[in-house]
Amino acid sequence: MEFTGWSLNRECNEYWEYTFGSDIKKVIIVEDDPDSARYLETLVNRIYPEALILMANSPSEARDLFNSAPCDLAIVDFILSDTETGLDLCQEIHQRWPDAKLLIVSSISSYQFYDLAEFAHTVPDFIEKTTHCR
Image 1 (spheres, rainbow, N blue to C red):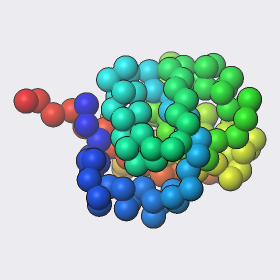
Image 2 (cartoon, rainbow, N blue to C red):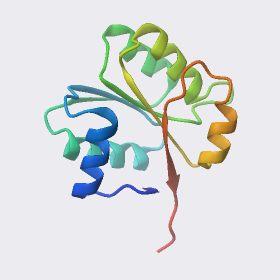
Image 3 (cartoon, rainbow, N blue to C red):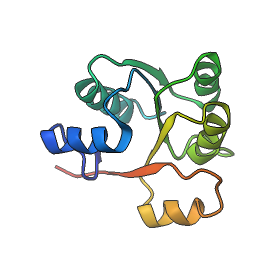
Image 4 (cartoon, one colour):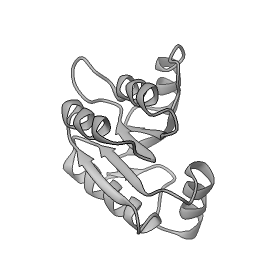
Protein backbone atom coordinates (compact mmCIF):
# COMPACT_ATOMS: atom_id res chain seq x y z
CA MET A 1 0.00 0.00 0.00
CA GLU A 2 1.25 3.46 -0.86
CA PHE A 3 -0.20 6.88 -0.41
CA THR A 4 -0.51 9.15 -3.41
CA GLY A 5 2.01 11.94 -3.21
CA TRP A 6 3.70 10.55 -0.10
CA SER A 7 7.26 9.55 0.14
CA LEU A 8 9.93 9.79 2.76
CA ASN A 9 11.74 12.79 1.35
CA ARG A 10 12.31 16.46 2.11
CA GLU A 11 9.32 17.65 0.06
CA CYS A 12 7.05 15.33 2.02
CA ASN A 13 8.40 16.66 5.32
CA GLU A 14 7.86 20.22 4.13
CA TYR A 15 4.27 19.40 3.15
CA TRP A 16 3.53 17.94 6.58
CA GLU A 17 5.15 20.81 8.45
CA TYR A 18 3.33 23.36 6.29
CA THR A 19 -0.03 21.60 6.64
CA PHE A 20 0.10 20.40 10.25
CA GLY A 21 2.92 22.41 11.81
CA SER A 22 6.30 21.39 13.14
CA ASP A 23 5.28 21.19 16.81
CA ILE A 24 3.46 17.83 16.73
CA LYS A 25 3.98 16.00 20.03
CA LYS A 26 1.19 13.39 20.04
CA VAL A 27 -0.29 11.55 17.04
CA ILE A 28 -3.10 9.03 17.03
CA ILE A 29 -3.37 6.75 13.99
CA VAL A 30 -6.66 4.91 13.45
CA GLU A 31 -6.14 2.24 10.78
CA ASP A 32 -7.49 -1.31 10.62
CA ASP A 33 -5.15 -2.53 7.87
CA PRO A 34 -1.87 -3.63 9.50
CA ASP A 35 0.30 -2.77 6.46
CA SER A 36 -1.16 0.72 6.16
CA ALA A 37 -0.84 1.23 9.91
CA ARG A 38 2.86 0.29 9.84
CA TYR A 39 3.48 2.57 6.85
CA LEU A 40 1.76 5.49 8.54
CA GLU A 41 3.62 4.88 11.79
CA THR A 42 6.96 4.80 9.95
CA LEU A 43 6.13 7.93 7.99
CA VAL A 44 5.01 9.91 11.04
CA ASN A 45 8.01 8.72 13.04
CA ARG A 46 10.38 10.01 10.36
CA ILE A 47 8.62 13.36 10.04
CA TYR A 48 8.02 13.87 13.77
CA PRO A 49 10.69 11.74 15.49
CA GLU A 50 9.96 13.18 18.94
CA ALA A 51 6.20 12.60 18.76
CA LEU A 52 4.36 9.99 20.77
CA ILE A 53 2.48 7.80 18.27
CA LEU A 54 -0.54 5.87 19.51
CA MET A 55 -2.28 3.26 17.35
CA ALA A 56 -5.91 2.12 17.22
CA ASN A 57 -7.44 -0.37 14.81
CA SER A 58 -11.12 0.26 15.58
CA PRO A 59 -13.41 3.19 16.42
CA SER A 60 -13.83 1.98 20.01
CA GLU A 61 -10.05 1.78 20.56
CA ALA A 62 -9.71 5.23 19.01
CA ARG A 63 -12.35 6.68 21.35
CA ASP A 64 -10.50 5.30 24.35
CA LEU A 65 -7.35 7.11 23.18
CA PHE A 66 -9.11 10.35 22.23
CA ASN A 67 -11.12 10.52 25.42
CA SER A 68 -8.07 10.09 27.64
CA ALA A 69 -6.14 13.15 26.43
CA PRO A 70 -5.92 15.50 23.45
CA CYS A 71 -3.63 14.85 20.52
CA ASP A 72 -2.00 17.25 18.10
CA LEU A 73 -2.76 15.18 14.98
CA ALA A 74 -5.25 12.40 14.26
CA ILE A 75 -4.74 10.29 11.13
CA VAL A 76 -7.90 8.29 10.51
CA ASP A 77 -8.82 5.71 7.89
CA PHE A 78 -12.09 6.60 6.16
CA ILE A 79 -13.66 3.13 6.17
CA LEU A 80 -13.74 2.01 9.79
CA SER A 81 -16.80 -0.26 10.03
CA ASP A 82 -20.09 -1.05 8.33
CA THR A 83 -21.79 1.73 10.23
CA GLU A 84 -19.08 4.30 10.92
CA THR A 85 -16.64 6.31 8.85
CA GLY A 86 -13.48 8.15 9.72
CA LEU A 87 -15.36 11.34 8.96
CA ASP A 88 -17.81 10.50 11.80
CA LEU A 89 -14.90 9.89 14.15
CA CYS A 90 -13.18 13.12 13.09
CA GLN A 91 -16.36 15.07 13.88
CA GLU A 92 -16.30 13.62 17.41
CA ILE A 93 -12.61 14.43 17.83
CA HIS A 94 -13.14 18.00 16.65
CA GLN A 95 -16.04 18.51 19.06
CA ARG A 96 -13.98 17.28 22.00
CA TRP A 97 -10.54 18.66 20.98
CA PRO A 98 -11.08 21.53 18.48
CA ASP A 99 -7.35 22.28 18.17
CA ALA A 100 -6.45 18.76 16.97
CA LYS A 101 -5.42 18.60 13.34
CA LEU A 102 -7.28 15.95 11.35
CA LEU A 103 -6.29 13.86 8.35
CA ILE A 104 -8.38 11.21 6.59
CA VAL A 105 -6.63 8.50 4.57
CA SER A 106 -8.59 6.24 2.25
CA SER A 107 -8.65 4.21 -0.91
CA ILE A 108 -11.68 6.17 -2.11
CA SER A 109 -10.86 9.05 -4.43
CA SER A 110 -10.61 12.62 -3.26
CA TYR A 111 -13.68 13.44 -5.36
CA GLN A 112 -15.71 10.77 -3.55
CA PHE A 113 -14.43 11.93 -0.19
CA TYR A 114 -15.29 15.59 -0.72
CA ASP A 115 -18.74 14.61 -2.01
CA LEU A 116 -19.34 12.58 1.15
CA ALA A 117 -17.92 15.34 3.34
CA GLU A 118 -19.97 18.10 1.72
CA PHE A 119 -22.27 18.60 4.72
CA ALA A 120 -19.80 17.82 7.50
CA HIS A 121 -19.18 20.49 10.12
CA THR A 122 -15.45 19.88 9.93
CA VAL A 123 -13.75 18.63 6.78
CA PRO A 124 -10.34 17.10 7.54
CA ASP A 125 -7.43 17.10 5.16
CA PHE A 126 -7.48 14.06 2.86
CA ILE A 127 -4.85 11.83 1.30
CA GLU A 128 -5.68 8.97 -1.05
CA LYS A 129 -4.22 5.47 -0.66
CA THR A 130 -3.30 3.67 -3.84
CA THR A 131 -2.26 0.09 -4.48
CA HIS A 132 0.51 -0.54 -6.97
CA CYS A 133 1.20 -3.94 -8.45
CA ARG A 134 4.90 -4.71 -8.68
